[in-house]
Image (cartoon, rainbow, N blue to C red; front, side, top):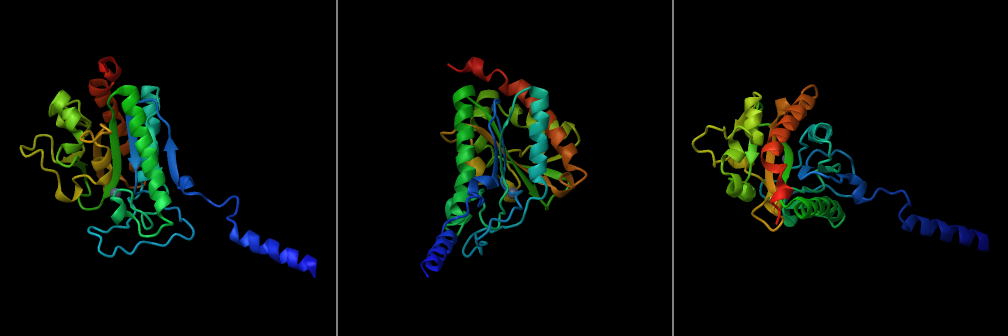
Length: 274
Ligand SMILES: [Zn+2]
């Protein structure tokens, strides 16, 4: 009888305690520590199901979205690998693997998740990004954060999101507008490589970004108008640049643009640090 009771007690405890190998929220965020003043963020490319975390319903949330930004995770991985190959250093990388259905890290907390169970996933992403931004600022004095997304409205275009240049305040002050749309800028280079960019580099109304894609919570939180001080650009890639047979080429071309930008505006960062 005692033995049966002991066995029951043991089973009861085992049911209460989390399994030793139960996945933790941090297991749902890929983080790479970097050596370069470049940070890559991919918040909406995750498809890994987090057990026991309810899906959001979005009651009262403006612009509620749960859709996956298809192939932005592998695109970002490929981009990181290409940058490392060319610059012989590592960019910082933060990629969400959990579904946007449970937490949207590109929203302020009140609109981002609904369950206490989802909060640790949200926090794990932002802790990793905040750490990266602080480390880059400390070491290099400046940096570039690219927040990689996908949109299905302008299929053959990349939409720039800097909250109409607010999140690249320091870059603009330091180097002027050409650092954002000129020959050696990231998106200027993409245009020269044949990509349609919105707004276009020669658009006289350049500061006006496509209203739906002006840049969300991530660039708004870590951009160079904030204490983090990292120039941040949200990049919304049209579906045709993210197709299965296309995303690797897109990543390669983007890496080339990062290199051009790095040579022109980032490389000598340390020298100028007081
Ligand atoms: Zn997105």
